[in-house]
Length: 206
Ligand SMILES: Nc1ncnc2c1ncn2[C@@H]1O[C@H](COP(=O)(O)OP(=O)(O)O)[C@@H](O)[C@H]1O
Ligand SMILES: [Mg+2]
Image (tube, protein in one colour):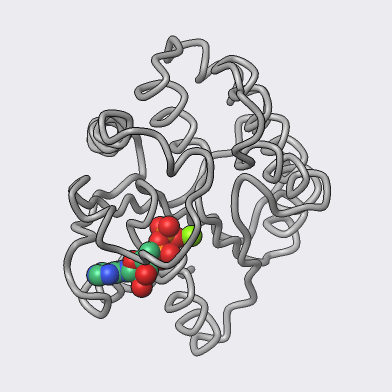
């Protein structure tokens, strides 16, 4: 990988843990600090990857776990090469909702695909790019149902509680052992969570 000047920050955690909410607050902070950044998300972030997102989240397709893994990684390969790497190389920070850790938690821990295989495919898709900081927002499974009740659930959000518990447990384990990864209590108030994220992000400034 040639020279990267921007920082790569990823927000992670189970569905409805507060990623988009915190990304919005972080966007305001980065603007205030005068840092140029790209705010993006996975799956998605480019035209092709957003189309793959549509397929992945659509309830009308039954998806085999291995096919699901390849779709996430196809989306990631496109997003990384088309958007993320070029941004980092020109000195723009990248703030991304979900990246590699989500695939390890969902396809590895929750779908039970072998973790070494998931890691290998992911390394191919990312070309070895790893975030400078991954923040995992941890919420108990019981908070899922009470949050944002009005929104229609996508295919993964319709998985049973057992699946969501495996996702959460996966994230908690991963956060303990992955480098540059921090687990935060996402069930605190918005402002408190934001303050903790802001402190971590400010440390990344050159
Ligand atoms: N710290 C929090 N405490 C309580 N509710 C929250 C908190 N953060 C987010 N929410 C609410 O939970 C719902 C899901 O948040 P969202 O940011 O969309 O999660 P995600 O992007 O991780 O799916 C929204 O209705 C949001 O207002
Ligand atoms: Mg979101």
